[in-house]
Length: 128
Image (cartoon, rainbow, N blue to C red; front, side, top):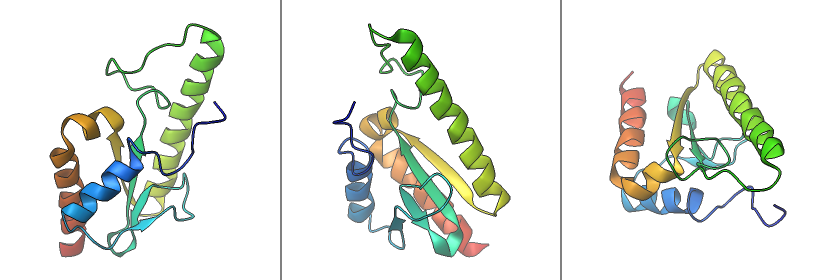
């Protein structure tokens, strides 16, 4: 577990960063000090984007394989992560932020839909 990086994960954050640049979607900042430390932030429209790994955040997509050892400890860890995600979402929304969570599997299967989803939020915030 010590080898798991907290930031710049290749299958999630780096992938979305490349997709956002390719789509010429600008105005975002990385790893800002907001509740939960969103992966991408658009201050102009108060949008926080998290890119969640399916295993670490307990997504029920089939990629979330239960470890064979220490099952209870992992289950508790993932449940705590999910509870923290909910708390962070509530805290950000209370402060006027809009929150988008992108799953690792969605980013792998339909990256264009993920970028389009973010683009809609960014553009709707600019017109409001």
